[in-house]
Amino acid sequence: MDRFEDMRCFVQVADLQSVTRAADSLNLAPSAVSRRLKDLEARLGAQLLSRTTRRMSLTEAGQVYFQSCQRILGDIEEAEAHVSGKGQRMSGQLRVAAPLSFGLGHLTPAICDFVESHPDLRVDLDASDRVVDLVGEGFDLALRIGILRDSSLIARKLCDVQMICCAAPEFLARRGVPATPEDLRELPCLCYGGTERPDIWRWIDWDGAEQSVQVPMRMRSTNGDINRDAAIRGLGVVLKPSFIVHRALAKGSLVRILPEVAWKGIQIHMVYPETRHLAAKTRAFIDHMRGHIGPEPYWEADL
Image 1 (cartoon, rainbow, N blue to C red):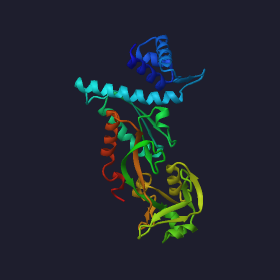
Image 2: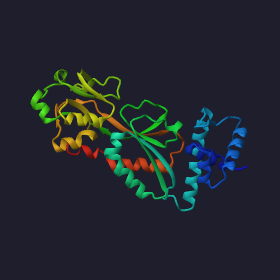
Image 3: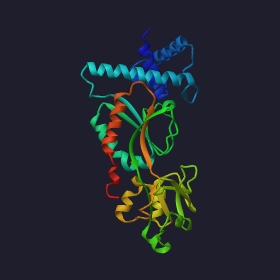
Image 4: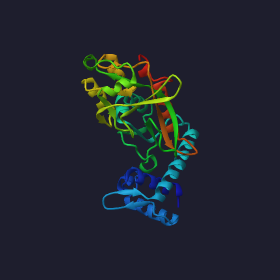
């Protein structure tokens, strides 16, 4: 009985959600993988996988065991790599989740550079605005923007991000330029729907106190690019992270308004499940992202 091989079989089946695909990747017969899983569950006295005709998923016990197996197998792989002199050549799979707008605008070149630097490492990127369950869905880490709601995750900050209030030149020529945040009450605004109160825009006054204004919401979208493009069309005012509007500002298709107002900013973090040992591939990707973005976000250099 090889417990480590049992763990590898289980992790591969959980990752691929298929005994057949796991068997192919391990160069084993499907019957051998099924037998290992059956013996493993019998030895542990717990069901690890819930199987139906359509899908396979981890049980609650399976999720706990899966996380532990990943950590143990990661430790073994890293130890063997260092001893064999391959410590700098990472292999296996790195699963990353990131918001769609940031992924399209800023993550693509970073991901491509990272893949080129580590030819034996497979990168699986989920670029969407849904908040993934890192443990339950088997992700190594995720890029999160804004408020961190899951306190069970470890967070590494990448940078602070400015919020920029802006509108199209023709819109401002038609409706006038607001002089104070309160003036926004009289203007149609394009709001981000990923917050509890998208119509509340917040800033920090000269005394360090948080202030807010309730704006008239002409349109709401859970995607920042859509709001930005609607603003470029002259439909209203937007308050967006700098990484979404910086190119439009540089081109002049949007104009910054109320530049003296310190709108409440956001932060970008890399988050990963709590573990006693951070896998080398995860640590390498976090370091790579820090180097790519820089101490201060490169997209804010000209703002």
